[in-house]
Amino acid sequence: MLKEIEELRRSLQALDALDDDTREALRMIEAALEEIGKHPVSSEIREVFTDTTDALGAPGRAEGTGLSERWEGLKKPFALWEDEHPGLVLAVGRISNSLAAFGL
Image (cartoon, rainbow, N blue to C red; front, top):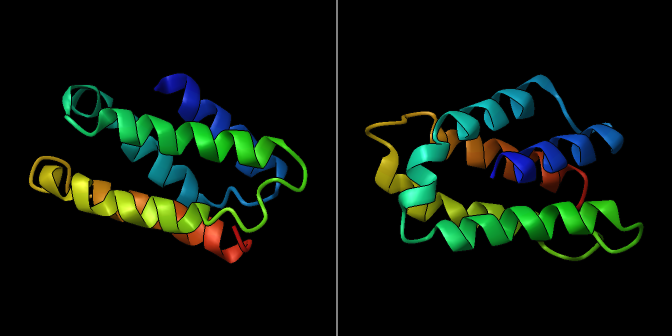
């Protein structure tokens, strides 16, 4: 998943959408990668990352794809880790908000 996170980071940076909150959110997700890989919804999480980076990397494709809503939908499965990684749900929300701010 490190590859997907780095691709997302580069895509957001290219759109000038990588603010300090979003950078910190990506760092929080990186810190929780071990648990993410073991979780039953890890394939869904990986799919959201991949779809986001694919959409952001293709001009015109990202518009109307509802990326922010897909990220918002990840908050529920991540809530299971909230005790161990209290900032994780917040991190997913920050990424969702960043994408929403750009109409994605």
